[in-house]
Image: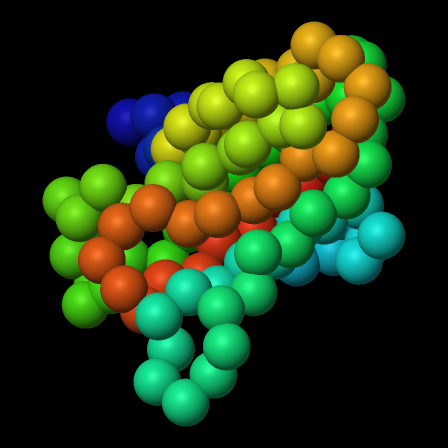
Length: 121
């Protein structure tokens, strides 16, 4: 019984550490030059469609999608549009690789207003 409690505590601690690592990575793991952040539909603010030049093989990770009005079933996702015409939708936590050099544009899917962030690595 004592060993089981110790194992349970260890698993709980491991779970908490993993959750904190994910939060830390979202905020600090990608410096501003390695992120795309877009926002759309905010009253009184212009839409921002962020874009950057990427090389073939660059990984893109959907780091943040804002659900508004905080409904998880609103279809919120990162929508990546590439200069060569390719388009990809990534849900939170999903990743892909750029298949060619060129500009990539990040738009946010879901109910407006919304904000999304993608990391480049």
